[in-house]
Image (tube, rainbow, N blue to C red; front, side, top):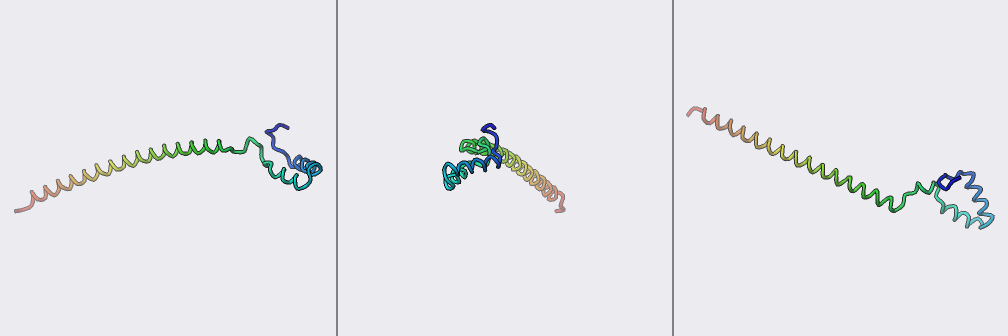
Length: 102
């Protein structure tokens, strides 16, 4: 069994019984409780968490930048539309004034 293989329950209990013989029950329990129930390479380190945090921050910045760009485009479209409608309405009002009887 390599260090990267998970320990079976049978092996854990055999180890526990031997530790009780050698160390005593309380010390054996303390030692066994300090061992992870998973394979060591599956445990996240502080470095792993820091790397993940940096990747998430970078992704958020990219998404935030894309959001700002889309918002700017929508705002520009709305302003151009508002100006166009205003000019059209002004033209209609001028036409009404010029065609109205005196």
